[in-house]
Length: 474
Image (cartoon, rainbow, N blue to C red; front, side, top):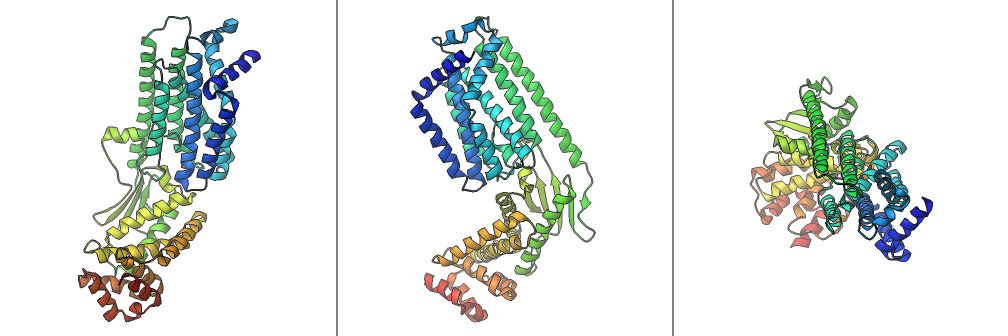
């Protein structure tokens, strides 16, 4: 068996890469690309993760393709191995050839995502098995090149749709890196989804690699039907949990608060309440008490993407309707505040919804841009005041970004936002007065806006930074 394994490894190396040098260059190239991606935000890191998994699946696919060709089948017949043993041998061969990617995946989660050891091990194991299973089923297909094409499409699909900032569903069928979005809060739906698909892929691949036996076309059909039945049970269980959560009574976060919640923990609502109250107070102040919502309802609505498609619903994660701010937790990513990128995304989603519901926001470019400028300051201030470890990174990001914004030359498209940002920090007593004046006087041109500053807000107009901005556009 050892001789067979060593011989098979040489064949894989020569058939796929032609020689060891090309193999080393290809793998080191992928490794360097993944290493580079770790210096970006969570989307970059996730991209590095699924690149590794797609690469593993592609190697497995090509390995199966090699040994299922007519001129290679004799290798699998050595030693009079049974079909099961031949199949296990092929999988074992694939595991050996891709074994070095396991510590790479583990290191990425431990360092790049700061995962707990046990969570990292569980996720890496599941992802690795899923990638192997995908490669086996694609490599066992008889039509030449179809397996490679399918894995290529799988990679493109993940590139397009694998987005941690996407609050559309609690799990997705073919997004292979989804478990690492909330790495320290295991997504059970994702794990069950991948286990079911891995079982399907391994079983279908076995049906295709059997040698010297009469293959029955009914077998794969029956396997697929069984999988559909199991997957339907899985979807039904998520739907039952969804309805149970929707039937719960709302609880108040505190006696004095107008924030109501259900389906999430008391610990989670504390962080959400801090964010909502801080932002609401700021927008209430800068808009002259023109913020258009009162009560807040927070509820968990976890359902897989498939169930939302079946129900035909598109739930907005954050929206204001009828004087009510609704926060629908449709994805675990929304509340994973351990990750600064995801917390920043949540803050900006809330900020956008609040600023768009300030009375008069859409009256003109100037009302919009003044509130936009205030929003930049609000996000910076709120991230500084939050008692979360990850919020400090967000504050540092906003400080650097806004300092760079002020250093760059002003244009007619952004100068109002810059001035509003300066007013928010340097003249907080004028924030509501400035916005109210622009709204009530229906300012609609650059000349009217500058004259308003010159006549009614002389202190702002003569500010050194404001003077530089106005000089840059005229």
